[in-house]
Length: 433
Image: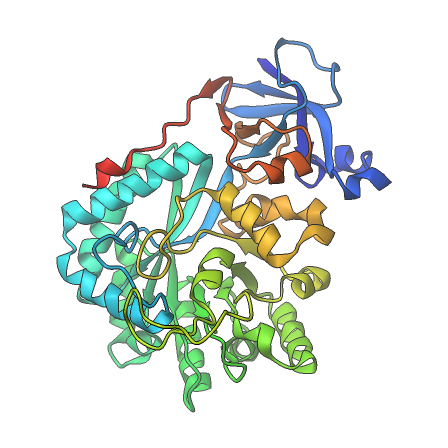
């Protein structure tokens, strides 16, 4: 047994009894507590106040420790293609066009190389589980899921993978939709995913989609209202459909950007529906900040713009947290037509989410956005918190407080796997050549 002594752990990620004893005024500014973490083999066996556990000790000297990160919304089939398919205007419409063109050059070697690079990056940064949306169109789904299953097998034991088959809603609601969905589930899809749009048939299509998913025994993971149109209310309609159909499986809604631009009374009504329906929200702040409210007149890298963006593109973080609606944050797109940057670093996602969303009033709960909440979303009992019977996959930061942690996010971190440290090995970009 190994004791990782004198660790500084966010209180919200500690065992409930330990956390209850940590309440105090100063936790608002630094909501973390010192503790010793006992590890035997691959699992945590005890968490206690400093110097109360016996065993071979490694002194962490009061450094901040998180459990391994969980990235619950990614796109490893699109990823790392920016160099060959940049979106010059960086808006949503052109990004989609560039992505569709890029699919013409997809093959097994290309998808494997980019997917493997993505997982190496995530593992090096301390991520232990990912859910990826994969193109479910008939054009490429066989190829994409074949590569995904190869990567899933190769990375088993390091990164747990789940898949969402992502298409337009018409793909599943068409007469041949059931056969399409069955095939995708057989190929490895854990969830059905669509990008619903406001139209006169939306309620009917949602009812059909939920009936299909219910018959197949799978949940839904949806891209919702990823725009700056206040009249876009797919989130509201999805919540109503869940309640109307008594849909028995999990429903995840990513983005939900337009909600932030609606009238307060309408927002409140929609949020209450979301809570009643048990919908789980995934916010993608970095990608939303990049794409939303761009004022570009023409598709040229030097094209003129009409002004500075006036909003951040994110959903109603504060209001959801106040209502007890589950919220997680995730990477979304990485270095592709939809988002030019990123490195599958969930700590970057965490820091940027706090800054973009002005989440300082909720600081004591923010570590859950990238650990406990997405782990629960993925049904991962071994991850998400630092307590007995959880996997001893830990991330150690050279910071002694939340303020130090958030002020120097680029500082090198250490990774713990069981009773030993593992060296972060961030892959060189030349591996993508």
